[in-house]
Length: 491
Image (cartoon, rainbow, N blue to C red; front, side, top):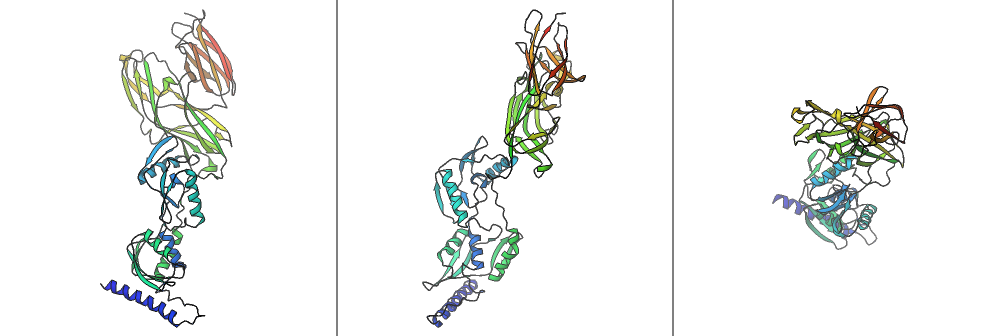
């Protein structure tokens, strides 16, 4: 009752101030503004502050609408980076933000399904039928200054405000229950009409709740907090990104091993990152693959590859890849299945460093091959000659990276001296007496080995019941495919 009486006195005082200046003025005299501790107008510094506080903040959903002055009415549907999403909650928005931040250099935006409804900064809701309409609304509210909302100061509602309309000479008192009703109240009055807040009120700031006792105290809170009021509303899809961009393509293949007993050799890769160079170390790693996928590596031999990704990256040098492998499995041809895990594989990743830095050039595409060495990655425990003798596998992924445009390819066929094409022959490459990689001939006797660094190699072809054949100083050239046909002689 005392609070209501105090506010009644405040409204009467406001009215008396106004009536006094109105009744005493001569026709040529200007109306004198009341004491600022009693009343203010919306054109004052305090009035403008309240207007900015009352605007609706639309920055939470910027990852889908890219406009801090607009709020989409949920749920909305759309697609992002090849996946369809229904956004119903703040948690859904957080998921999309996480996906975006994996690689902020990809310029693709969230493709919304229309029609939908949008709440503007002035709390009005409108229907929108296309992306073009949405972009126009965003441009309009920025142009009108409706993107200047203050997010770091909030008022604890309800509050009461005494008003006086100078044009109609009507005094009133209003209860304000939220930002929308405060915005509407301020919109009803001219810049010179008088307003007075019933104090005390509570203001919520970055340091917590504060009791405010008057206009000056409220203005002081803003003056103190304004340095923390740079919300830096995120613009996600900046088409004017001042960076030169190239592309990185990533392929997966394997260096096979004898498969007489093996039906499948599976690995699950859930993420691949690339390490940035000194020039752009503010983002130490960029995610270039984020689609947890299981691959049967035995399907990726003899020149067969799986395309993992093609990613936009800033121009520059990148140091290495980090491949996150969660688990693997081996299926024997007799039906035995061995599930394998790699300790901390999903946390630490496997560092894969090419012989030279990964160079991304403006407007060009680099292509790298991740060669999964199956024979070194799945090491048999027990006797590998029979299924019954196999006790399991030690799983330690071994991967090499090769620049597709800086390496060469070796291909050919394996046959006997009578021209019969031979499958299952092992082709081994040595570089400077060091084992480099292996391959197996397919059912048609053909084989292909990708990603070979330029230079001279020794090539050995061997198959049970045949003599080993060796080729010396076989030259592999950059960007070229070298073909050999090897004949094996029966023992």
